[in-house]
Length: 201
Image (cartoon, rainbow, N blue to C red; front, side, top):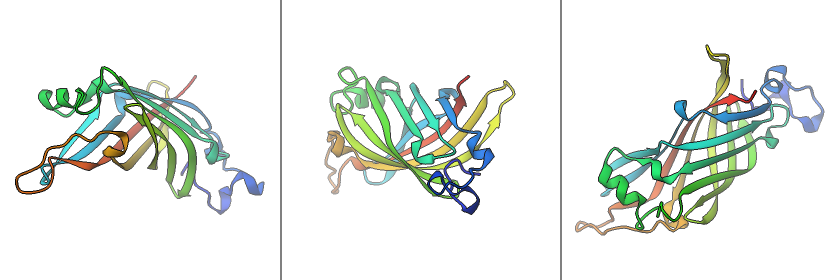
């Protein structure tokens, strides 16, 4: 079952066809649960290995529209000082003026501008990603993992997502040349998301 799917039985609003009650029932506002969600990234280091990291502190909200998926929205605010790669020195460097300038730009934000059904449980959400005061479009491919009520009575929905960016497009240009050729840190960064969101009361 997909919030954003459009099969023959669930053809969208534009045709006037009936909407699946299961999908329509998920329509509402949700708050991302950071204790059960992750926002992560992967960068190539020294041309030979991947370094993984993430952010420990973030907030976000979703509006899901099971009747008209294109009206669904998402917003996320990430605290840059919460970056974590498992190495304190590297984290300090990432927070510094060489990279995220966390003192001057304490937050990274995403605000959706468009939601699209791709078929099945897959969809794409496009929006504005702001880093270092620079705002550029970002498309995130997402898979809907399902909906459930947890033992505490919370109605949850879950998603997995991925995207790629060139960090230089947001002004993240620091690097160091390698003696063997190439650079220390890749320009391409892979983003990954595991999101659990709770329906608002």
